[in-house]
Length: 159
Image (cartoon, rainbow, N blue to C red; front, side, top):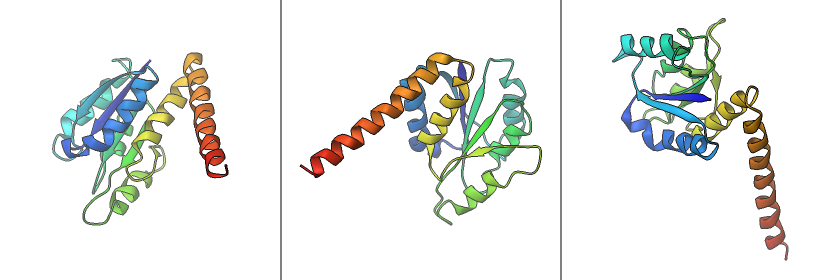
């Protein structure tokens, strides 16, 4: 099982690192790239066109401002793409969100919240879990732990 994480700028890494942590926690192999839809369009296209041949089964794409990266990737691969709109200094990430979520018919991109790297990685795990039952089991355990943690906090607050 293999995922790819691509970001439009190295400045996106502090957010993207959270997705890396989730993939590592679930034991998902991944590749990490910095490629821009605008500044390195040929390389971004090549990355997308060869993803399936490299064994990539899901792609997480993080970008801000115009945020065309997820769409460019999705337009050049049959592999599922999850977009992370990045927070921006100009418009707080609304520009990124609208760029990622407003894909034309035929170019689907799953979109998470602005800066939602953890959910992007968890969605990638869920997508992979269709093929890999061990990931489905691990994801269920993850959710059970979340529930137990919240119930423990609730019990402490009401003790």
